[in-house]
Figure 1: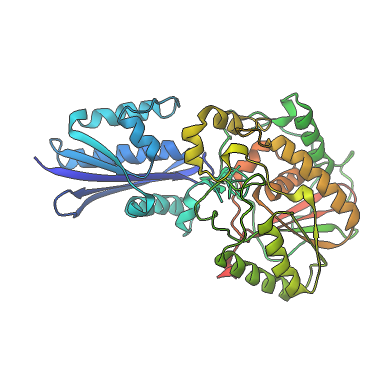
Figure 2: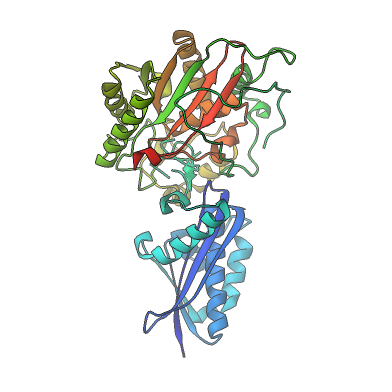
Length: 459
């Protein structure tokens, strides 16, 4: 009887977000690659994409020899544990996929093994190539997971979503916004007059990414949540995104421009771990310091930044000091720019949180009012804090260009408030370490956003 090894993987840039899978079938005796499968599957979660990869790998093995024995190797502990029956499958999108995977071969001819991601690079590469092909260009494999120093998406954090890309992302991201992160529909807001498309800020060009992220399905709009924090968040968004009335001409005065810089990498960033304001407060890694130096050089060439303000956390203050030294400026600290507190999730990956606190995680992904396990900070509370800091800085730096060195969740929050977007928009943005974005705030209440999110100047 022939024996095959199936290696499979899947990823989502936003969790949920643009997703794809990859699978490889090899001969167990020789290691020879016999078949490959990869596909972009549209908007899905990481785990759904992983199950789709498993299913594709098993089907490819069956086409080679329906009588074979199969050893499945995956870096998704969730899928491995669920397919072996040790963990229950609760997610409605995964149940039919798992049931179908269990029927491709008789159960007694399939075994499962968890392996580290470093040993699953072939399938991971295929999954990322599938997502890259759909988005029209190459992308670093690390971004295939949530933008999370994360987890970006989740979001990211930066995540899914804080210092959790998701970005995603995978969480991003993102993972969960906030995760060295993540966090990513609501009813249409009030009618808005157009804003200047070009905006103002650090320079360059870019466009807002619209990759769907964690929390996009079933997430409630803060405007309808009924909580005081959500209502305050809605008002904060409207204050900068909508005029008081009519379609009046744009105010032509000099805007206050916030150039938004996410701090450089920390040791947690490449591991995609939640890294908020309640954890170990890591400093920059050597890579992060080099990123900060390159950003400093890029901003010095432009010569537009007039002041530097940083979050109080170590990684942002260190990034800010490096940049400010090059620009000949001092660094002011603003408490309101700190990252979300992720409570008991600090230092964990999105997958680890999913395993240990699944109910709390699902609630967090579904509502901006939900708090992370252990008394962390909700995204609604973060938004209210960031909006207050924004208003304070706008009054202090009226008409000036200010570099704000902060984190995934505060940057995504400032952007979404300027756009008048609902809370789940956090899971639809990806934010790389040491990337730049900008928001220009005009006296008539309008704001324009420029998303560069381009780290090509860092290479």
